[in-house]
Length: 353
Image (cartoon, rainbow, N blue to C red; front, side):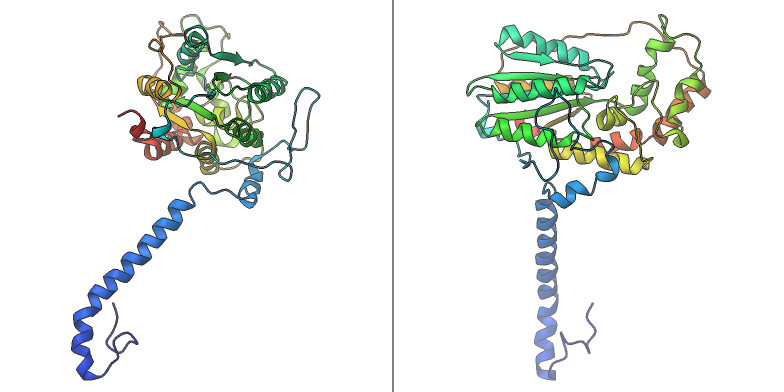
């Protein structure tokens, strides 16, 4: 690595023997120290957030933080809010004595079963529960107002549940509220736990079609090609007939990909939101989800039930299935779930041992 004429080893003849004996141990030490420093810097920067970092994702935002509504409290700009970064769940502090469990329910991931289970805890564990979702953009402002009240009134020895679903919360454009709620809750010595569940990308796209093409389909004579057309790359900003997991996480039912960013940028933004704010991200494992929640909250509860289960049959041609696969990939969902499985594989195992 170092030629004999280099500054490192250009010494008098009587020193060359000694240098040759030590050059490789010295080199190894230098490399190890530099490597450890590099790893340390990168690991320490994984969850570090600055105002510049936050502003760098403005390309993905299509609503100004300065806009507000009469119903919403605390409309914020970047200059007006102070963020509180997510911290790891401390196994030695479990169960936390108080907090808010915020479940971000992505459609067709088994979220209805989890929500039913969370509702049961109202009676079983004296937990305050609220949900506010629907099919209109105005729903979000009602959810934000309720979540503000939920956070402000949280007692020092109670758990509350917030269930977010259709139009409840648009993570991409309303991200500052997540920082504010964490600051409000954890400033009381409690814990904000934000959680979601995901599943196989192509399987999710197919399962979304059951309401339209299943035995009890409700939406007329639309063809598969028409149904999937908004997923074509050139239609990246169109409203979908259904929502993939990637689009649901980033945009919910709000405006979709207004700036026509690439699928890679969408995946990057989704992972950024998860890494910054979500404490529990589970891939196809409701049992692990339940065990984590019970260990964190101390709830005494039954198993998660099965709800909203489709018992019909879906029949597609090979061409139609191939189109589901191709367009789910083109939208970025396959890469998104690969990233989820890589980043969150073995995630939080220290809490369920």
